[in-house]
Image (cartoon, rainbow, N blue to C red):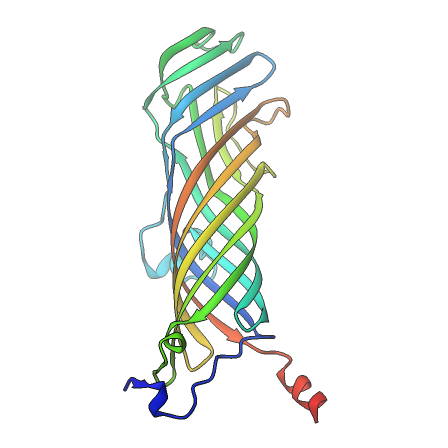
Length: 273
């Protein structure tokens, strides 16, 4: 039963200071079209307004609940610490996936020489079909955004002076910055497929979220995050001189489950005695 705070005992603010939290969840993502610049010993060209999508795994107990396969879907993990009742710092991994759409027509500018393919030539705002023999380009293992965030956390029921036994309804918002460590899966101009982790760039993001906490410790949370990714150093083949660069905006929706815990409460209480 929901009751007005003024009809009950004085309603106190939740004390999250010194608590830790952790969550695990899943995301869906949307990306703006981006220009991708490829360069190497015998080529230097740009593709304009390339379309890409995410690649979320269809829901099922396997792999979503299978411990040996839970990183196959697009996932989120975060651990954080409340340094004040309403503020936390945290470190997390947003494991997204980015898949260039095959067989789209885009504009190309630049040159390709001595590739051993039919794509040699000089291009000036020409159309080209992104077929598999020309380019396959994905960050599917994945588009890994490792980020630090600062977050504010407010109990909506506190603000409105309501009390709901054993349930707290909270709003959270904040911003973060971090690094991009993609495992890019690329096949370019007949070269052998390249699929290795590489520190490729950086990102920045902001978000808002809604949190429902049960019995002060367990929660489910939904978030909407928007951000900017810039990767000036993407590996594309086994040859170190072959690189690509791109930047784009992203929008991410998350559903998360987690817990709050206080591992130093007994020591602090004892110190006050």
